[in-house]
Length: 503
Image (cartoon, rainbow, N blue to C red; front, side, top):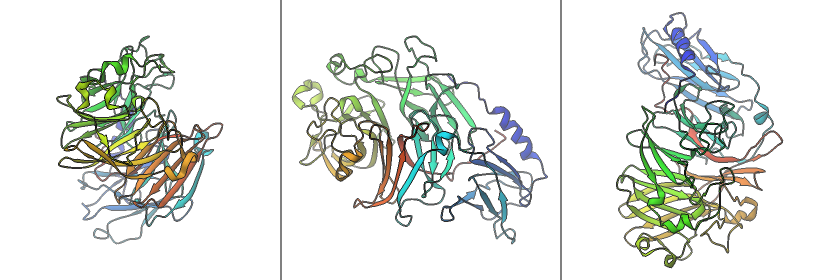
């Protein structure tokens, strides 16, 4: 269901300011942390005399001068009767420059004072040992987002300076939607123990929609330590949300639900126990440490292929990745270290055969589709390389890595084509969590998220040849549960994002 929006009152107050005609480019209205949950952001509101021919630009700097972040203000639809609402990401200064085609004058400099970082961030030990900006995928407005488990998500620049954070603690999910908004998994209140809310928000902290999925969680209330929502969400072509959930039965983390974006209602459910052999869950006896229920599958990553309508998913506790069609629920392929002879005959036709030298995944995370050409698929994932049930027992625990594969559906084979992490050895082994993201220039951002049993997270960007171009280590402290569930390179702010206080 959709819950009450706690930011509506603040938006109405800002809408009144937007309608005023007293604020100009020379004397704008500024508001730091306008929604009280995004302390390193601000709104800059001013009225334009005429429609500009080019966008208004501004620049922000961190304490170190090389950390320059150029941003472009959206000025679409700005006329004599409307105001332009702009935003920034900075703890220091803002230089605002009007389009030269409109007015020739020096830039306007604003000094904006933000509050101190919370202890969980101010005491964070963030150490950058490599930062080659000329070779990184780090264009305008781009930061590295650190999504932690049950603490503040935050973003850093190339020097490791924190340039954005949210006071709303997130759990696993942090997704940028097609409209430029963010979707975060968090709680509906500070006292709630479960993370059953999906909040559609923006970088300023304005909530657009908030969905609550409680499910049938045994004891049933929000106070349960079980969480119905977990791990991942993807946006479907109809803009509904495909969510990994637990349905409250004997088994957990093995169900997908489509949530209507407008109403918040669940409109489709896929129980993965219906797609896979019953022996896989009936013979699995390990229980979740939190719920005491059987966590036989543990779906931790989703990807929706808009071209084919197929869903790709990663299931950690079976050391398995697979693809099925979302409409028909027909399986396309399965890759697992589970021996073919141990599968019931009905499923053997779906099994991919690895070519020589191809890694068997173990406890993997972060499955993404890179490309698709006919019967050839290229995928990327983070291989924790831990033998949960069907991984590689010989290499388990020796290293973790990002791995790219090519799948040939005409031959039902899978071939490893690229990897990075093996040479780092046990120092970068992570038994849980992690992520791999292929960047726009072909580099790969890898989150070794749980080094030394949560004492460190090491985020490395490498080029196609495996050369490091960025390396940052996040170390834990007494107040800082620092490990990064996922690390993304995100565009702050995407070009299609617009703040409209009238809505």
